[in-house]
Amino acid sequence: MEIRRYKIPVAGLFLLCLITVVSRVQAGGYSASLEAARLVAEGKITVENNVSAPINNSRLGIPYRTGYHFQPKGYWMNDPNGPVYYKGYYHLFYQYNPFAAIPGTIEWHHAVSKDMIHWQYLGATLRRDQWYDANGVWSGSITFLDDGVPVILYTGNSVDNKQYQARADPADPSDPLLRNWIKASYNPIAETPPGYNTSQFRDPTEAWRLSDGVWRMLVGANYGDGGLIGTALLFKSTDFVTWNYSHRLHENPTTGMWECPDFFPVRVKGKKGLEPSAVGPHVLHVLKVSLDLNKHDYYSVGKYLLETDTYAPLNPAIDTGIGLRYDYGKYYASKTFFDHKTQRRILYGWTNESTSTMDDVAKGWAGLQSIPRVVWLDKRTSTNILQWPIKEVQKLRHGKITVKNVNLKAGEVARLMDVSGVQLDIEVAFKIPDVKQGATPPELLAESGPSVCSQKGASVKGMYGPFGLLVLATDDLKEQTAVYFYFVYSKKDGWKTLVCSDQSRSTVSTNLMVDKTTYGSYVRLYEDDKFLKLRLLVDHSVVETFAQGGRTVITSRVYPQDAQGKNAHVFLFNNGTEPVTVDTVEAWNMGAVKFVDYKH
Ligand SMILES: *[C@@H]1O[C@H](CO)[C@@H](O)[C@H](O)[C@H]1NC(C)=O
Ligand SMILES: *[C@@H]1O[C@H](CO)[C@@H](O)[C@H](O)[C@H]1NC(C)=O
Ligand SMILES: *[C@@H]1O[C@H](CO)[C@@H](O)[C@H](O)[C@H]1NC(C)=O
Ligand SMILES: *[C@@H]1O[C@H](CO)[C@@H](O)[C@H](O)[C@H]1NC(C)=O
Ligand SMILES: *[C@@H]1O[C@H](CO)[C@@H](O)[C@H](O)[C@H]1NC(C)=O
Ligand SMILES: *[C@@H]1O[C@H](CO)[C@@H](O)[C@H](O)[C@H]1NC(C)=O
Image 1: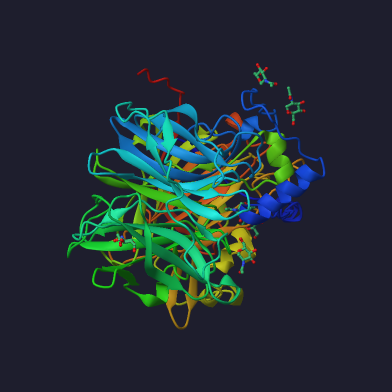
Image 2: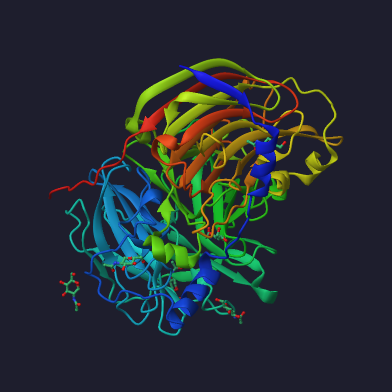
């Protein structure tokens, strides 16, 4: 394995800074729907009206379609819905607009897989054909009833934009592919309780049961002045048909509407998952919500208090909505399920585009699902979870490259000569610098926190950091996506470590309007940590970063123009003023997934 070192010439550096054009787009969620509706009304977007018409993925979109992430053949996808394992198959349902690459006429579509990597598309599951869901078959979940038969709970958005919870059952539970579903004749099963906003009442969770034999589910809502109090409403049922509103499981006064709540048990010890109704001394609970206000997924770990049927975070300072996030990049509306085949709790999340609505339409598609992640409690803290890509994705690895012991001097960039391409899995371990109190530029003090990542990108030198990887990079580094560590020092807290993903130079394209925000957060280090570790899953237009074994995760969307095929290189870099040592790099090319056709 060869590496090639060079210092970036100073003139080149200057140029690189000048060409960094940061253009932002506003998309996603409500604002994206409004913008899309306006563009349709103005005749700027044509919407297909024939559901059988072939999907047109334009040449613009092709280089950015992923090789091994879940993506429909075209048009718009958002939230993952009702993931389950049933009769030998993993099922994934998803929010889908079958008529255009914009949010709008959303319904449930469905795909099945034996490994959550290779998929068969099964098309529409639930269409907009009832008064209570004519304006959208929105997100929901699947629960297994006593006989092991799965039942869908979802939100219908009615003709007058009121939200209702509804139920659907498999037409033939013996069909392992669960191709056909029937909406219950007695729908809707739950209406907005008095005092809550009828158009802010959505996304039922998987239901669970306590020893009283009563089913419980949560529905996201908000209330109070300006709707600022975000909450999860608890409903109860004895027969899964009649659901009564009971009370609020939990709330936060400053977070606004809680979308897609997810409430699940985790083991105090060990990586194995738990079925949704598990309670007891060996169990803690995770409460995750998706904040409509800022489009991020927040969670906390806490206790499910059975006497009051409420939730209390272990550390109120990092309560749900104000503390930890699953992912510090683009990741929203996530949902877990218990995979009883392998005893894992697995997390899916939606990663939207960083391109504009018009560009999405020109690409012919928008949205993908991140690689499913196993989640478990971090037993060191009990207040955070760890996340790691499912091991099935490793079946796609081939052509392993290993590099050991590379010293990177200040300002050095070293290309990994045998690694290139747009489908990669890379693991790198740096020796932890022996940080001492030292001269840190004032703007890099820890007080400015993770915003150091977004304010300064990878180009601001500290003592230790930025150092890390450049992926999807051209030889001249004009295009590059930097993923790196950064040490910041504060008198109050001492040294802290950041992990960041810098999109500011990820494309030189002037055809696309791209959101180039740099993302980042702290990553915790412990006394016995020997290395600073990164794992990157690179796939055309998505880079998923797992730092320190999944303590901090960042998903980025990037649209390189020149860093394509063999021109997409990987570099190690150190832009700090002190040297760093790379202990090991392991890198693989990743195969592309094949579409499958399961016969039943
Ligand atoms: C989608 O992407 C846009 C542009 O980067 C961003 O503003 C928005 O918050 C994102 N929405 C979600 C749901 O992630
Ligand atoms: C819809 O598209 C299909 C496939 O192209 C075509 O066969 C069919 O005639 C179209 N239907 C209408 C009403 O245009
Ligand atoms: C209810 O929610 C909608 C947003 O979905 C908002 O436009 C409306 O103002 C809210 N109504 C009240 C009474 O707060
Ligand atoms: C729901 O309310 C009805 C009517 O008050 C009552 O008969 C039923 O027992 C309630 N069910 C539950 C699970 O609380
Ligand atoms: C496919 O989409 C491209 C870009 O939007 C458009 O120029 C082209 O006419 C479309 N082709 C068909 C067959 O609709
Ligand atoms: C390293 O720092 C220089 C500015 O000193 C900057 O131009 C260059 O892009 C940085 N490298 C990376 C990978 O950000």
